[in-house]
View 1 (tube, rainbow, N blue to C red):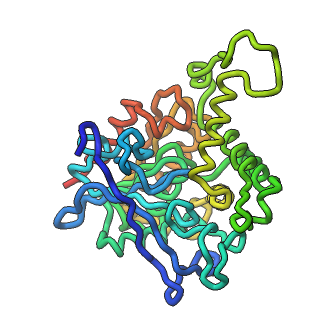
View 2: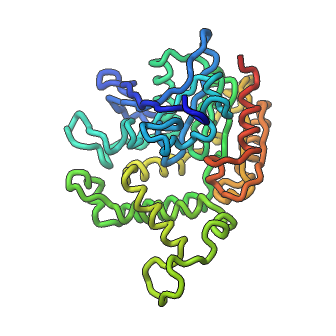
Length: 374
């Protein structure tokens, strides 16, 4: 291992469902084969009690920690996962997969449909957060992992962890839900709507069949990313990073990018195109829109006696999923006599704080994961 973190890691893949034994989605639609990309860090102990499952956010992937050969380009949660870090790989066996519907090795709308020999495109069935967990439960079976010590995730990943703990009371000891929500507000749905419209109105979207032509909706996807990225930061962080600085001072006003913040957003949009697929963006944002885990009939009875301990973490400057979102989660759980707590962390970096070095956040997560750890 390299100082300060994990060394080189490898993304693996496994077929979790087949055409003969397909995945049955919550809608009743079936899907097979379903392949899942994943990474693991650390070692599973003898009694299998130290497994920690990491759920990624909207644009994440299986590569949460370590590197793939270039030590300067590390996984998206490398600050938290590794030896001596909050998710300590000297102590825990960490599983980090790509989601169903993803575009980084797990079956999604850009995968080939074996029935037609062509990519699914918009024929890929809609799926729910619960369906994401159905796939990942099968992955755990394939890996020989039973009950989890913990499941944790940020944003969409937090929603996934929450749904899993609600649906399966014996699945895990601990559940950490970081800057997430029990249901998207109208404002959050509006943000995703604009992003999807930017993609689908791009002439190169071609009804979702753009892979065949080799011309994808790059302009629309880049604009969607630029718009979303604004919501991941705070006004304070924008002011700190950019202020009103211009790339070249003294130039005449024009319509092209001039301010540093404009160049930053253009870079975010352009770099996103090399690692993400527009169809996955459409499907996963829609999955988030319909997430309402506490609205189901019979939930009070289903949650009775659930032994899972929950921690919700929010950040003071996160205006997408501000503290009331986490407070609602904890309130719903406590109303049903479950053990749950909420911590609001001071941070100026907005929603993206869950990816960054925020000492109080790291300490809180590390302390939570130590509970009943063997």
